[in-house]
Length: 167
Image 1 (cartoon, rainbow, N blue to C red):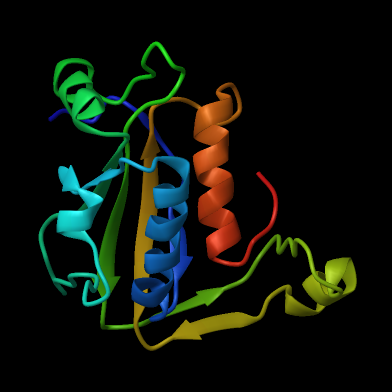
Image 2 (cartoon, rainbow, N blue to C red; image 1 turned 30 degrees about the vertical axis):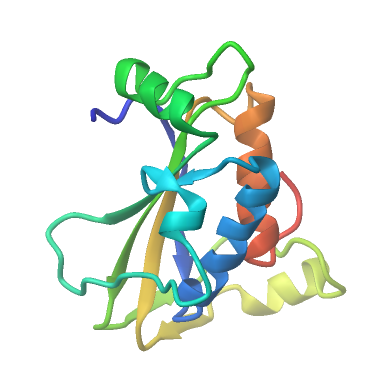
C-alpha cells in the first residue's frame, strides 16, 4: 500500500509510549465500534494481553493501522489514505524505538496547557532533553488536519491521550 495521506510531524516519546498507545487504541474503539485494528476486527487483534511490538534497529518503522471496518479496509486498498463518502478515512501510526538514547537542546520552547505557561517555557529555553531510550511516531491521516475535521479529530485524540490538549 502506497502512503498517500497526510503525514504529521514526528512526535518524540519516552518509554511509556507502548503503554499509552493502548489508550489511543481504546479511544478509536469508541470512535468506531466495529474498529479494524491492524487489518482485523479489534476483538481478534487487540485485548488485555496485547502489547506494542518493538523492533530496535529495524530498517523501517513499525505501524498500527485503523479503519472503521471491512468496507473501509477495501476502500483503503483501492484509494489509499483518503476520505470516504462519510467524511472518514483509514489512518495509521508509524513508530520506531531507539534504545541508544538522545540528547537534544531545546529551542523555541512552547508549553501548552497546565499552570506552567510561558514563564516555564522561558526557563526551559536552551535546556537539554536527555532520554536514555525513546520512540519516534507519526500519524498518517487521510487529510490535512488544518483542512479536514475528521483528521483533526484523530490528531486531537492522539494529543489528548499523550497528555497534550488541543487540536
